Length: 250
Image 1 (tube, rainbow, N blue to C red):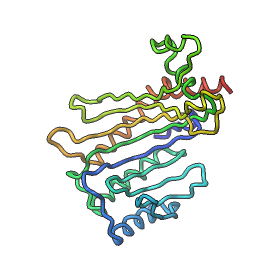
Image 2 (cartoon, rainbow, N blue to C red):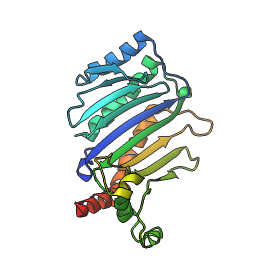
Image 3 (cartoon, rainbow, N blue to C red):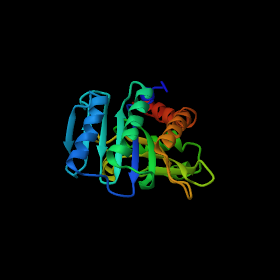
Image 4 (cartoon, one colour):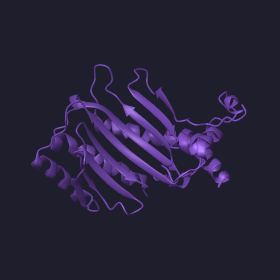
């Protein structure tokens, strides 16, 4: 669990989401007790606030390159870390949040709609990001024949790919690669500092037919599996080609 992925991209995030069937509690005492317990375990998380959309968030200093947060949304519990130095520490933090949720938030197994573990990578590039995606990921594929036509340019190559990892389709993996270049920028060749190219790889556990999700057992399995898939599939076949293609354009 000590692998660092930041060397393959400009920014890297690990997030955990518990999606619920019912709304999570909003009582003052319950919220304060939950976030105070988290703050006690992770003292660097010093900033507590309510977002404009009504969600509650406890986070560490966002001015630091690596920071973490725990958010309580209407029907979702979130725990994330940006540019983590140690993957094991991320695992321990997210598992601690999951361990607190049942008795401090009243989270029951029957209430869990899904559990997501998400690894996200961002690649800075100020230009037609679709061309980067096309060259890095679609080169020598049937799609590239469309780009051989004179005066053509890629304007939307954001893509998603979902697979099942078990026979019941309860454990799923989703890969998306998203460009943020607008048609106006491509048409005028006036590119601004837009959002980076985003690669997101998510493992989602849904309740198996006739069963409930044990969030700690599911999280342990997902966190181990997503690292293996990142190391063997995503990094060599997606992240490295994107990084190499961007380096050649700079």
